[in-house]
Image (cartoon, rainbow, N blue to C red; front, side, top):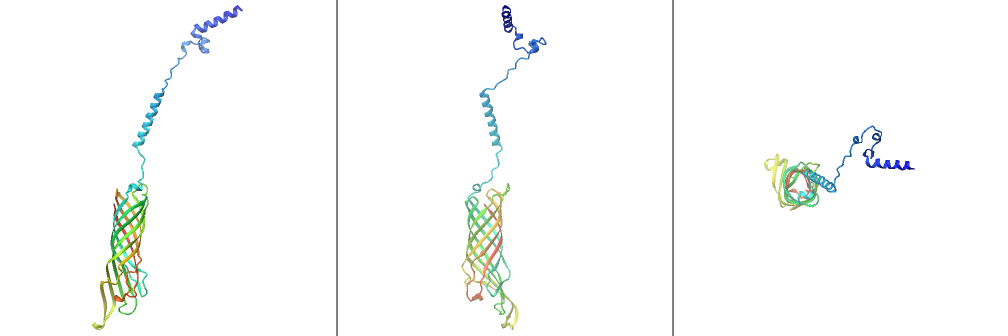
Length: 290
């Protein structure tokens, strides 16, 4: 019993006073090395809560600054294109007659140029309502059928009107990153006549007072009393809009119009009693828009 107590006391003393036995690996205890050969612990730096918060704030600031320096491209919306647009147009066009009454047939076209001023106002998004003023000349060529001298003729008509066109126009967005877009419009026009001209050409005309000589007779004149004062037309357009700079656009398109009113009165003068027709017009639309 005394030996057991002495052994325990010796072990306790060795663990408390000799550092060689404290947390020593097995190779030290076996005499294969020294306790000083054990590497010492290296302190690990820890970040305080304040430093962590500051780092997150700095990262967030850099992210915000980076997003501001390179903003994503934003497409131009309809409202940014403006509410009111003024257009100046010139339209080289050709005219011909249709729905010709019996005893006549179409015999060619006439040419003219129509200047127009239009004001377009945005209704919603890319839908516009427009109204304007133009100077337009309708007409065409037709030939009378028959063997009589007064009916065997070719006639050309030029009927000029001051017109007030109104329309609805729908415009597409620009194509990708380009500055071009398409548009389509439909509307009508009310015209008030200001000038009416005709030209009749009689082929193989026999002049009995000149000894029955045969030749060509040309007759020109105005026919205000033989023409109706007002006209009404329906209009359709399709075209391309290209923006050069802000509030300055080039317009290229095609316009067609049909005159719903027969312009000739039913009377005996100028042998127009049986004549009836309607005007057709198609032209190349050229213009600028602000």
